[in-house]
Length: 166
Image (cartoon, rainbow, N blue to C red; front, side, top):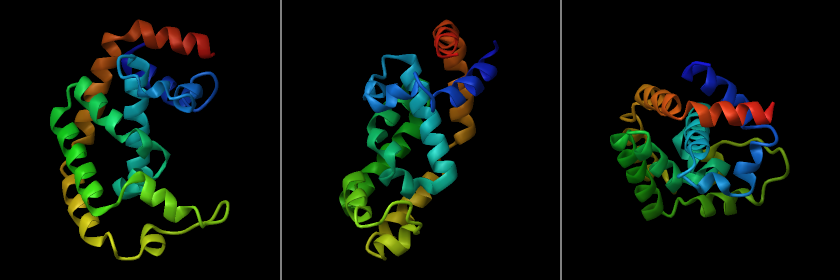
């Protein structure tokens, strides 16, 4: 398989057993594992694409935000890693941490639908504006290109994982 096909196949299989367990048991935090590196990159890209950078911080993928910074560095995206770290620093300074966001969500009922601003009000508006400005400078196409090169370098690991998961 070529690297793009490997990423496409892997991006589907990471949400199914047995690969989903990498996320559930915390193995995803091991960035020495190429499978974890790309899973972190896929999760980050998916979460930000679907829900935006501010929701990423508070959603399940946000638990691994610091590992994502490291994964970006590993695939050669140092400027994007630095921007994400800057975003995390701004959020932390504002008190807009994964834990704080989750705490405010804890009062919602199952399957409740709400927006970030409805749930949190305007207390983090300044931080969100600053975060959005920095996030607009992240080159997601560069991340994709570098992830593809990384997968090409570790193709045997991805082919084995996909073969075992099938």
